[in-house]
Length: 472
Ligand code: BGP
Image 1: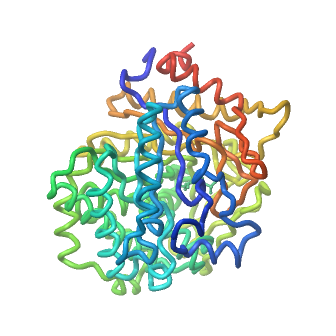
Image 2 (image 1 turned 90 degrees about the horizontal axis):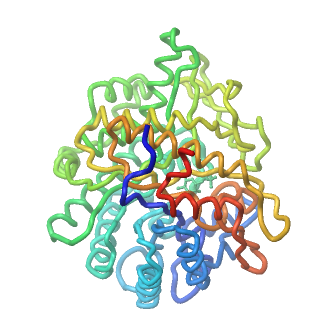
């Protein structure tokens, strides 16, 4: 049994530009699709978020004090290019230089994501990544950032290509709010993977220093009854939609035979609507061994069973009313929530072993992976603020159990080099608002004061002991 985590392990905290910065209309920032979408469909907006645009020195000081030695930050594309391309906004560029300098000043290594859900509005309304011109615009934006922000050591192209496609075209909880269109889901996944590959290939070609990788959300999928072949198939197909398709593109540079068979089962005659081109696979093939790291975001597992009905129906539980979720997809299967596993108020099934299984699957199926970071994991909770803190024992336990699963995977041969808790401080949740909190630091969104939670004190001990407190 491990007694500590590896020597250079990162105890990080994660953020994302749109969920943290606020200042959506400041210093020349361009609009993003989410601005309008939240105004029209939800009960909150991205103002003030956590006012990270102004408060970042406070958050980074807290990070340093509480042993957090890495931070995931994303660059808002529309601060750099307000229209997604063309003229550069110097104030946006300056902001990120200042932010990165503060990170280094505090000894907090920034892991920088180029795209965390926030495509500029005019590109989004022009098809987002379904439009191949936007693939090129993304690559140009990436190249600009590689050249300009040479202080960055760790680059991530995309955060969660999977949930973007699902949120935008399957569940319909992300702009443009389209539901049940699996052709668009796979086309979006594919085009974004091509954009990733092109950015990686450009990064290598120009020989920039530092590392580059991608962050995938990888929820583990289990058959409800492992002895029932129909349930097993439902889990496999659901896995293809969320995990296997994008992992194949990342590490095989093509889609495996199993994935292609699965696509056929899921899409039937619609399969021929997909536009996959030879030149796409050339880029994917060229990039497949060039990913310095894989970021895994892991929050939950799902249990799948057979579904023979003809209607696809998904209910998203956005308000944290336990039991509200429903999920069944024609030709795929349905999720069973009533299993003997704890779940959050948002019906996210808490299953640390799923993280172990997912890591082991990656290292077995994709042996050309080089290194893994757990780039997001955390407990969304309706925190109770009392005595100027939150006694979030549930969160501490959640983190502990998941880190122990990571330790098991390391012991069994996985090269995992860090863990970033979602989130460093409280931020708002894309489709659930400000009530679903995850942070180590409680944010009073009215005053923008920060208060360390009990978990922050625990995290400091974790980091100071290099993980040893996990094994006590
Ligand atoms: C991931 C996103 C994060 C964050 C997190 C928690 O999908 O990368 O940005 O939001 O999930 O999800 P939620 O806010 O829906 O609870």
